[in-house]
Image (cartoon, rainbow, N blue to C red):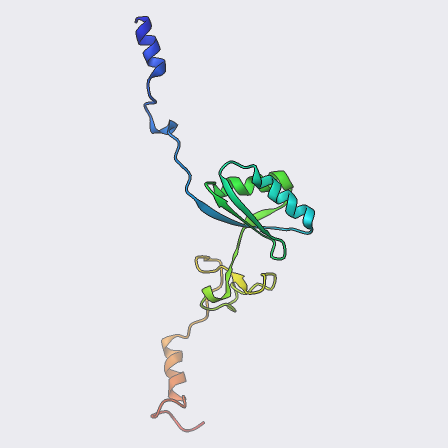
Amino acid sequence: MGIVDVVSEYCSLPRTRRHIKKRKQFQTVEMKVRIDCEGCERKVKKALDDMKGVSSVEVVAKQNKVTVTGYVDAAKVMRRVAYKTGKRVEPWPYVPYEMVAHPYAPGAYDKRAPAGYVRNVIGDPSAAPLARASSTETRYTAAFSDENPNACSIM
């Protein structure tokens, strides 16, 4: 093996796709961080402002909500906030009130949610489903209904 072969082996392209980095997508990361004062707000902003790929940081202290936009990974952003601030960080669990079909269902309503928001239960299997009437219950109910012209008039 000559010197040219040794040098060309070191300079060759990687043979596996493992070494090729994927470009991060532009996304919005919303998270819930307890913010008690202006100092906490500054601490969170400072932790994220110098992070690579972050375009903007918006902190809403009243709702304990932090929104980060940019070419970032959501898990890395959350880990960084938790590490730099020492606070508990979780993904934003709430959606606007109008987005949920049954906002007062057992799993959706949360009294700690900010005004106008309920817990996101669209894809959450742990939330209790609404009770649905079976076909026999529906028949018995319809038999005594005021809207049914053939209903029993005993009641």
